[in-house]
Image (cartoon, rainbow, N blue to C red; front, side, top):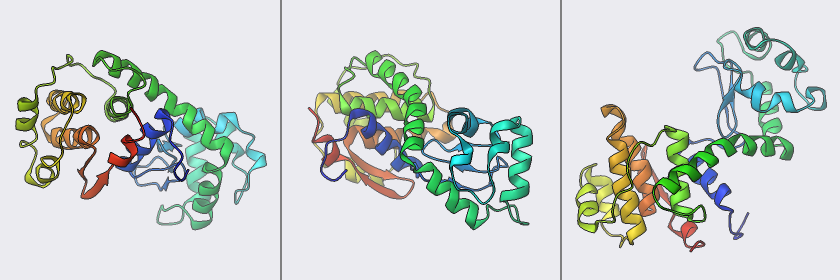
Length: 244
């Protein structure tokens, strides 16, 4: 989009997909036994999400695949998965290159991207609810991006809206490792950011212990605008400058 300002919806997708390592054209193989996962929400054949959100809304004969994918639409998901494994996976159970390329082209067709965005709308609606519980409007870009990431990663919320206590936030930033603390401490945070830092910590405490740090760092990276998530440095500060 160049320098064009993103809608808040597209901003949410951009930030969460940066964490997830997925885009509209991302294709993952049969690593989880689901045949293949595709797109920004990693829809897959085994659970039927690829069929339910994408394939049931298109004419499979219009698109170019090594063989027509009509069985994925016509058959029950279990039989569709078996068909896909027979025709699209090699002897080692990996997605054949010609199939990977065909799915990448298909998933990035404008009409298919629109279907993916429609599926993302469920999480965006949940983000509106979460932002509202925190006292933010649906036009607050940072709060919506934070809330969308909560919706995608865990859906549930379950905390009260905290006060913007700067001292408390400063203490919290020291709890999750020195690498990000060195990045975060150099940023002057406003009251809204402080509130999101504290909310990140409170919501992280609801996670299983082994997932708390990952959850907090993702959310705090949105709250502050920068941070290291899964060894990757993210900087969203310029993105947020486009919004009030």
